[in-house]
Length: 237
Ligand SMILES: [Zn+2]
Image 1 (spheres, rainbow, N blue to C red):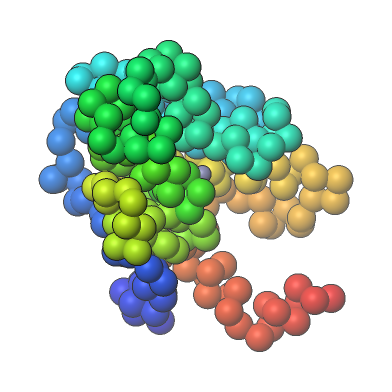
Image 2 (cartoon, rainbow, N blue to C red):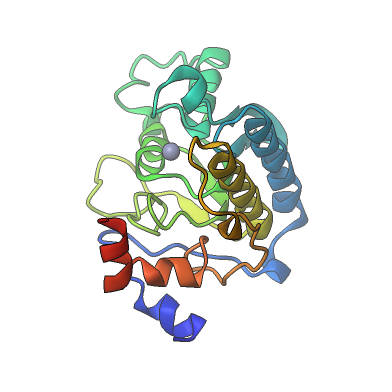
């Protein structure tokens, strides 16, 4: 099965538009500059033994918040980089509008309006939806998140017309995608080596081949094998 066939075989999101990837030559210098800052946050998460995902929120040419995963530290699965940064922004720039909590989209002092989120991995369904609730201006991500992605890989929370109370936002991916994927791979490789019963050494090789967008970041073979009967039987042993 070729890469193209495999990408075509992936199911489209159940709701909303599929993830959009911008070709490298069409990516603006400004977007790339901010994504490099998000990558630094992902590196920080890596050093702190957290799943290496980093984010920065940029408004009017300035970073107003940085976030990284803190799920292990806080033992809280909702502490993703994006939600960490949302809390920080609301603490730093509290909106004065009376109706902000219920109707952030119609408040002129909404700090998320005119704000772009740069995040190294596509926001998950939880974060993708939260970003729409608070009224984010735009989202730029690195790697797609084919397991949990809320910007079109699993669900298109950014523009699903069923969410009538929040306007859609633009979400584009593919920015330093390879770097984001390699950080995740390095993390999971280290994690496996530190496990009490590490998997056999042959599997502890850092894969450097990166599949085209739309194909599992874990590689064609692994994703393909997950759907084959022999993998299912091996897993159940
Ligand atoms: Zn998330």
